[in-house]
Every structure is written in C-alpha cells, then in structure tokens.
Image (cartoon, rainbow, N blue to C red; front, side):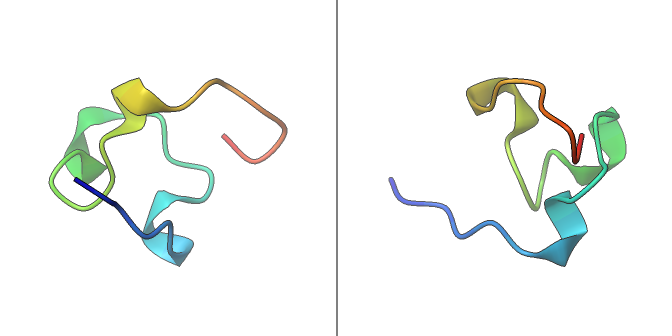
Length: 32
C-alpha cells in the first residue's frame, strides 16, 4: 500500500495522525 506524505505528517510524531500518516513507517528526522 502506498501512502502520500502531506503536511498533515510534517512535525507529527504523535498518534493523532496515524490515520493520515502511518508514522511507524518513517524514521525520525528534522521535520518530525
């Protein structure tokens, strides 16, 4: 399954955006 990273995912490392962006699939970087 492909996900598109949008502004909803930027600077988000909390579970409130998991529905929009499965943050567990991303590594922590400068924008997280």
